[in-house]
Image (cartoon, rainbow, N blue to C red; front, top):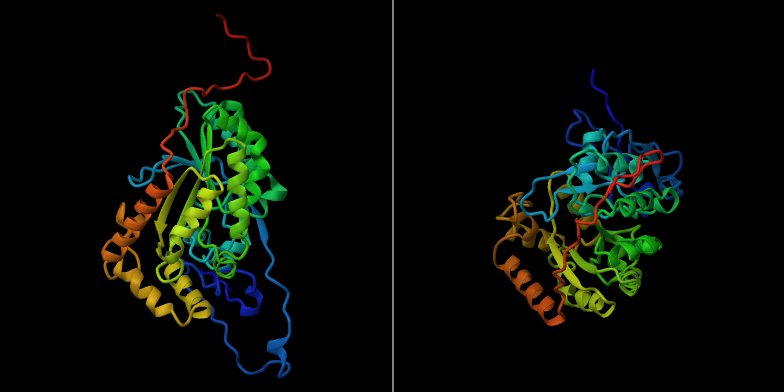
Amino acid sequence: MTTVLNTTADPRLLRGRGAVSNAVGRYERYARVLLDDGWSQSDTAEDEPLPPLKTEIIIDSTRTIIARNQSPDISFDRSINPYRGCEHGCIYCFARPTHAYLGMSPGADFESRLLVKPNAAELLAKELSAPGYIPKTIAIGTNTDPYQPIEKKLKIMRQVLEVLWEFKHPVGIITKSPLITRDIDILGPMAEMGLARAALSITTLDRKLARQMEPRAGTPQRRLEAIRMLREAGIPTAVMFAPIIPALNDGEMESVLKAAKDMGATSAGYVLLRLPLEIKDLFKEWLEVNRPDTAKHVISLIRQMRGGKDYDAEWTQRQRGTGPYAQMLAHRFRTAIRRLELRDTSHLRSDLFAVPPKAGDQLKLF
């Protein structure tokens, strides 16, 4: 028997969210479409306020916490995601399609039905203590943001950092949230030993555009201020101009990099907009609502960098694109980081890793 999921959503419910729809994921057989049949209770029913879409927290009963990958165009082979789904609501987030595996929508569900891993720190300590474990930098924030709003209350990311610090394990963090500065008391000492570095993703300096694209993320100015605070604490901090969206934010590349450099950023990176699976439709819907005058132009430029398609998943090409426009963006980026000296080539240390003794363990003999 197939369950019919009611994943429609009144647009009024989605105010303050990134997605403008909540269509079912690609694995569902049936979908329901919201239609107005004209039988409203009153002529003004559609103008009546509705309660905002509330965030639902679901416990994720995962048994492991370190995820592995062998992608040749990614600089890390392991990562941790304390949360599944992200309340920041970034319309372009390439993690959105993962919610389809859970029988949920990559649309509004992704940013309002969040799975949390309250035992993440416990699982991490267990995995790091396993015989034969070989330490390498763990990346956090590569899928969903570890410092999204619910982290302020749940503190799962902080507990994970406490374990990494205890084991002297290297970590690299990427986030859009100034909440990362809360953990400077852990990250500062780790960075001093070559065990931690951070990156702040700044897509635009335009507050209005940021609010539309990333409705619940920190403002661009607060992210710049977070870079300053992290650098003053001695934590190597990069700026990620990601994603680059042609005809929307690509003209801001140099200004974003300059602003981050002025705040102390030591390196930089960029990623071209990626539109795999359901994201292409979600992004196009968002464009039609928020940028109807430039929507067709944006999509045309994207396809010019993706071999005529909305997306090309080929290794290396998925991050940078191909064609003259993509080459121009790459040239501008190289020129900017050379001029601004955003080229920190230092590496994190793995040689300090040690499993801390447990209560009752015998002391090692010398």
